Image (cartoon, rainbow, N blue to C red; front, side, top):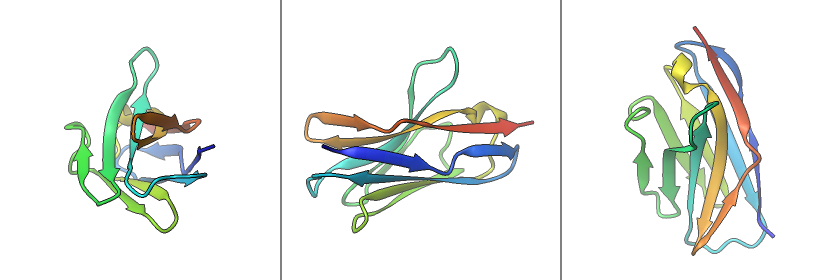
Length: 115
């Protein structure tokens, strides 16, 4: 059974920074994709960034240049460094792990950016 546990959300002023972490536990194959998605009230869940176990990254246009995704394969942990935060970044952020055809999701962590 795979579990994802997120941490690091909170309230920050516009222009500030936050760092999210997500630790995966359980049986995880060495090749996988970890990432972050977010969902604001009334909106569908959207991609923020992903990173493969080999280090290839992908970002949404809205966060490219401000957010950085990284991972520690020895700890099965993925990080999201969020800089220059904007009020429109306010959302629940979800950690995601894809192994083969199976998607796993974390419980979500709230990020609120005040103007």
